[in-house]
Length: 295
Image 1: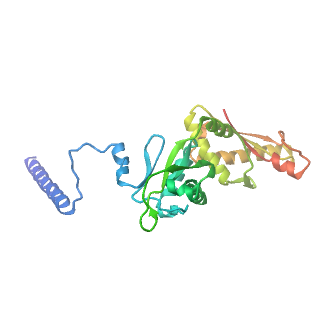
Image 2: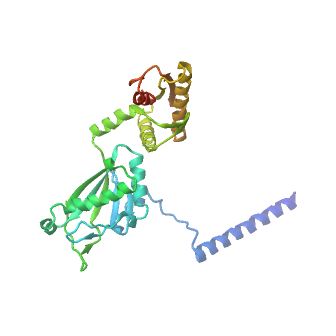
């Protein structure tokens, strides 16, 4: 037993020596160990670095979402502006915010000098409009972008360039618009494509799913009812089955995209609730639908 304690003591001694040597090599030579008695950086310390950057975007809580050491370059007396592709991850950052909050929009502001108004009365707006068009090309919903202009005092360099001519900020949309969006979320009709009864989701269903997910987070006591409807071709009972299969396909898509299975109910009305003429091809196409209601 005594030999065991001796061996264990030697082991502890050598372990302490080894750890001390490792720290010395790592910290003094490679600088990879960082032991500090300072308090950890707060969230505000990490994001409030505007003084070191020409361009940044904030949300309506004044949190910085994106920042860059370079700004948008504008040309004297023309609406020409740096392409957004010059800013790595800018478009992705904007998409992430707008896709995950239906109450938010992006305001793009074009700067201008007083003297430039004599040449082009809308030059600030046109600069902002060019950026908006680029954002739309890169997949951002046009309805989520607003443009404005701002009188600003600055100096162009000898080449007629100024390197901070655009501002962006996330803003909360007005309550009336939010109400309209939520009415569309809680009662809507889709005509998704199916391969027989297998859902082929499109961009409209994807965008709706993002909004639905946000809505359910905002209202945790609300639940979803998905109802499948068919046309009147075929047997009545078969159409009830087909309608339910299609409703379940949409349910599966919602679950895959992060919506809680327990909050979804599926139903089928088959051909029993037409909303258009059952005797025409156009009417039958309208009757084959998915209705989604939130309650």
